[in-house]
Length: 229
Image (cartoon, rainbow, N blue to C red; front, side, top):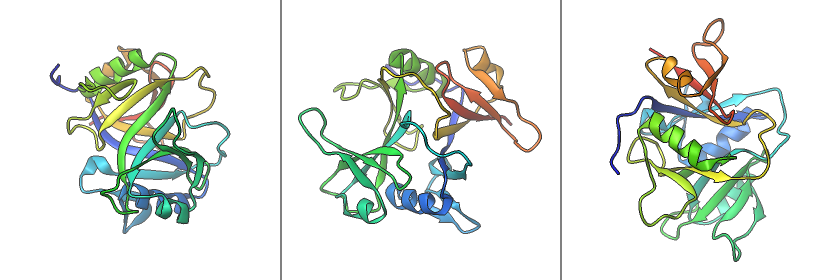
């Protein structure tokens, strides 16, 4: 299956934080991003789509992250020094470490012997779902991505093919429903909001006032932000 023309393009990854400077410093090292000299909580990569915004929010984390990041590192030492903790070690079911960042947000660490301890590399973004295949198809059409080719190592994954600043966008089934606002989301750019709403997205907050974008939800209620020209 070949790529199709995207309806929208990836713009940025966004992380909610209670301690904005500390979480920005952690993820700068974990994702190999550099702080913007004018705003150290805005993390920059080599390309515009690699940027990460770490946003201060008043609400504390109260539930497991429904969106989490997978990172590649040479070992765990650097992450642990920065304040990460190990929640689960590799075992008969998984080959990676389940970790928590300094604010308790879950992420997974994959050890790659060829890498140094830090900086790490963003490998994939993983989304908990009720219907992962429907979610994968929805986001695949929107971003012009195709399902993972052989060999299949994920549940319902989309291959980046250079359109995302990481390798895979993965959707996995979980039994629990979404109950709170996601603390990780992404921004996209789209020519017209109607391209989203006619496909089942919901406008949570329209552009205007103090925001220059639309706050949206995908068909399972996951928040994202849409920018239009």
